[in-house]
Image (cartoon, rainbow, N blue to C red; front, side, top):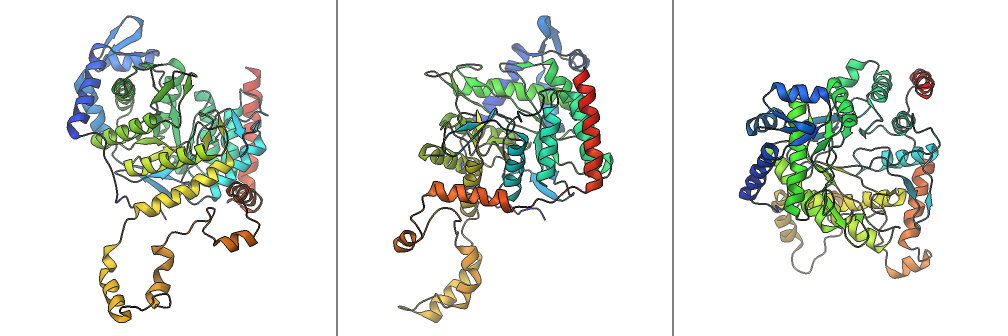
Length: 482
């Protein structure tokens, strides 16, 4: 069954007037500045619907095409797991959290960096599969023990073997995407079964400022052909690849998103799209793409609001940090970003467990963030006033000076009314002292190791695994000969 989502407390950053101003400004940018599309097929499509094509493949897009494309994008996107069960309804203010996609390193709890091998990918995928508040997963980092030409297929198969959860993927090119879809079709017993209940979301990126590259568009067309849900995700940096103002960065990324939406909906009307990106800043002291900054979260909230205004599901970023180890800075940045996203109502929140300004992934941080998300979700459940009559009766029956610990209602509701941490300590001092005064880092490391050793994911049947592995061998041989 799909997990119920209850988003009672919320906040807004932009007024409706401010959202409309940003939207109109984006329309002006698309009509007057334009966006580069480095692909003949894209240029043909856009030209045929009335866009103006200028030199250097700059495309000027009329406002009515943007408005029409927004209307043609589904307001709800359903995502399944590899067993065919509905797991995420991306709509309204439902919020789901998941891992990140292919950064360079694995970072240990003390900051030690190590290569991300196939074995580490297996461990990470099993951890994500075990954590109840991680709703979807990704490959998290590039595996280093497989040739670059074929590693995307191996990474995704590794995740599929070790987690039943939905996956956000990318691929080197459209050919490797074909192989990935073939793998999923084997798992689902047919391509029709898989594409009817997809458990992959396909991720591509424009290049800021205001460019869609040949390579990205080639993959985008193939993913749209299959009918996969699409993330066409810009990552503008204020002061680097976008204007220094936050409104300018929002405007640049919004123009990239809307221009991609026009292409997608005029290539295949009704394609499911998740709207958003990683809008952040360039730290002018050290030239860092900031991941723990308040500006990232401000623009995240703004994009979630704009997406709701458009009635398109949104994409967010949380559980991330610029710290280089799991320390106090990481704790603060991860917790605040998770709470900001859940209050903003971002639908699909990714990169949980990313560390060191998106240069590494941490198993322990992923486990820690799972507990923070649990805390935040309990807060979002609000206060249930439906049981007010029961509360009045309790006070009447117990009276002044009485106790409630042995009451039937206490026994019935103490697990649901009160949140209980698994990692964070509430032990009385003497109990904590008698059990070795374990630090939080020690408990976190122990819990991570326990999951790796004990969690058993739902396996892919042996006959299907054999068929997939033969397919991958054939793919590897063909790819390495090119």
